[in-house]
Length: 146
Image (cartoon, rainbow, N blue to C red; front, side, top):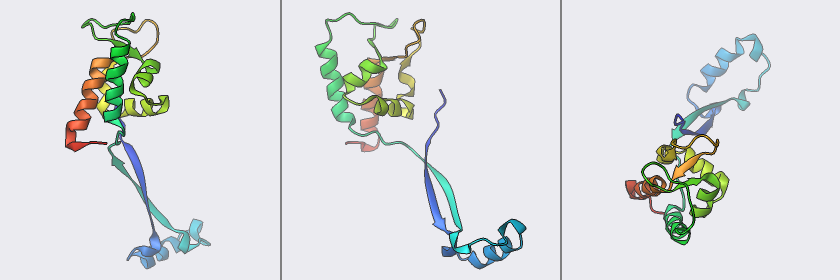
């Protein structure tokens, strides 16, 4: 899965630019802009930014608690013996909603947490150990405490 950064739209009115008169004059020469409203002109661009994950420390505590509470249950593991969680269980363990989990999983922070050793049942599994490590790294990186 390739990481696609989130983008924020930045928009300004063309009338706020120093080149406003020049731009209006140039556009007026084109037939498709013969009757355009110059005040409605806008310029926009998209700024890429890193998604901020919120409530990580609370989710880490919930994950630890969930793993401890469910330690005696039968569970799926990978070749290294790490516990694997499907999205439904992972969302419950972290104490977050599925849409929030999906957003987190798309972030660059959790991209390496999916376990590919079990693919026959078409369910995505995630290593609890890898998730915990990635979230702890996120908290430590640049002081992302929330």
